[in-house]
Amino acid sequence: MADNTQPAENQPAFSIEKIYIKDLSLEVPNGSKSFLIREAPQVNVKLNTEAGPIEQDIFEVKLTVTVETVLPDKRTLFLVELTQAGIFRIRNIPESDLEQVLGIGCPNILFPYAREAVSEAIVRAGFQPVLLAPVNFEVLFKQSRQQPQAGGQGAPLQ
Image (cartoon, rainbow, N blue to C red):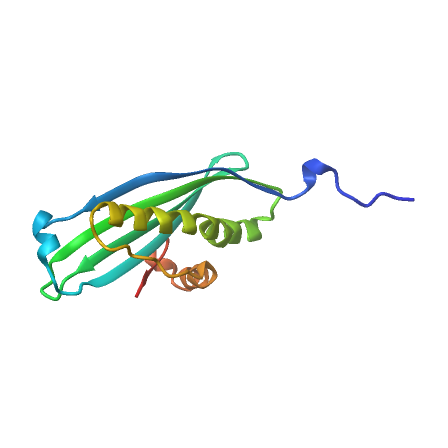
């Protein structure tokens, strides 16, 4: 009987090596005056993903989330910028599929961590939490492929 299985070293493999916050900044431009404002701000959210190799079969994927709250008079109440990153070991995945793993699969893994870190930073700054809505990274990935001139994979969310 013939064994049609591939040796383990030729099997596709995916593992998470590390998930971490690469960069986090929070700005409250109006300081303590911000807590006296009673107007409801508009919340603007932008996402961007970036991926690249670190070593053979090891990739870093970064998900950058920017949350800015703007008052009707255009003053910024607060601004949070977070880069949530992950190191992933990816082996024996065809090049055509690798882009999708890095642009869809990895950001899907990183997003819950980014969502929690953004909300936590905003609460620690003394504001009500901003809970980011779920994101369909497959749609963002496809949009970025249709508009390659935009650079990176990013889209503002409302």
